[in-house]
Image 1: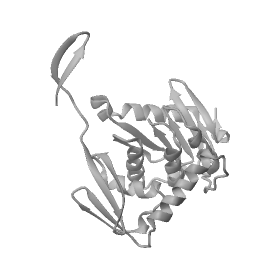
Image 2 (image 1 turned 180 degrees about the horizontal axis):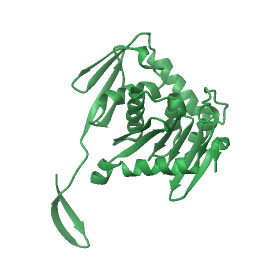
Image 3 (image 1 turned 135 degrees about the vertical axis):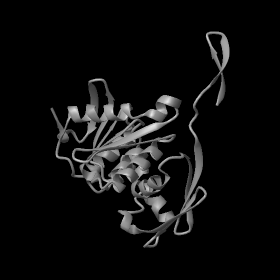
Length: 245
């Protein structure tokens, strides 16, 4: 794309890379539930991961069919789905963090311990894999690291989308998310951590900062939440028991 750059009082045209994004509309059992702008890569995996991190499905067996028409996807589940009740349950958890209410979530017991070396190694893998970001500066990234299966990585213009894509990739690859480390470039907000908790991650790391809502949800789900993974340091906000030197 042709771009006009101003630098130190000098203007010049040059060719620059810009991320391609598309509007994806999601329907579940014929009901529109969401639409969002998405980087046009791993769209099938994005839908699979979105359904998992949104707590709409437990696994692929809950899906009867997925059909695309242009960028609208129709997901047919094997069971009924009530979007109103689903949304109310989601909001009640997030609102509970702001009212200091007790949050009830299934606890994630995987990964008895994790070392600082594993955390730094996983963050390095994330940083080394950000090809689209390095070309455009326009994406977030997420990576799932399993000690035996290696790692999967995804980028997207949205941090939630990047998480959904990498979860879909991991599930397709046979990863046990309860025995995997999740690494992301985005802030650890309540909604971001809740999606990770619904997916079953025991440990979540980011180069960025957490929000109070994210820490509350991590504590309620038994998750180890780690922020500011930079250089040779990081901060642990919940689940201290898993950290081993």
